[in-house]
Length: 262
Image (cartoon, rainbow, N blue to C red; front, side, top):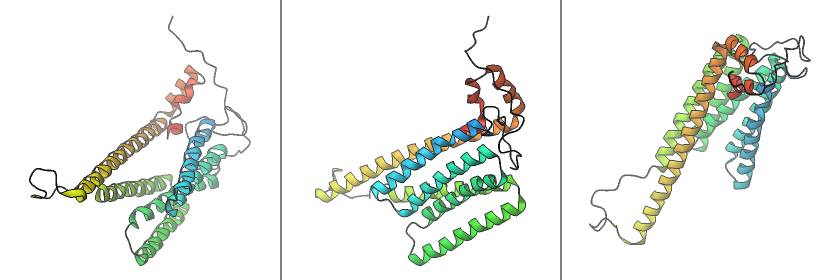
């Protein structure tokens, strides 16, 4: 007899939920109202608690360490993404869907401004701010007019990729130690005086910071890629995944909630 983990049977989806009817243009693979009369998608809703917690940690760190205000605004934006996604997956209402999706765009626009305003003059930052606000307004109006989720997904992906590549460029330009000058030093490779030792220490420090930054980038991009993969598998093989969830039961079926991983 094959080994089977102890589990509970999945409840049948509710006939009508508290927030019915569904008006959102996207309804995910998680079955609606199967666990609660008041929460349409339980896993997709409560996984946002992790997002809200991490955003709260970021806000506290920004205040504690007196980081530039733009990063505080970005973390507050992350918190709004988590809150709006929580409400959207609870209700599956169209206006809550817009709240969720557009908060993703606006927060990414804040990051766009942050990475491109680095080193610019006051006038340059003002012009960049006007451009970024105009871009956010265009995406908002056009998406609401078009009503096509793919447009939002493409714009979010383009903005995110732009922010990531620009951040990598700024990071490398700022922290990567320059190659040693030919003929510099006293011929024995040790340089001269305290200035040389101080410069060497600064380069080693920057190199360590750069390595840590690359480790965080790799971890973050890997997490995004895995979440995106699970989300798409959830969309493509939804009927099969729903059947597998019911076969293995709760709580193990929660692992197969692909959008929850995203």
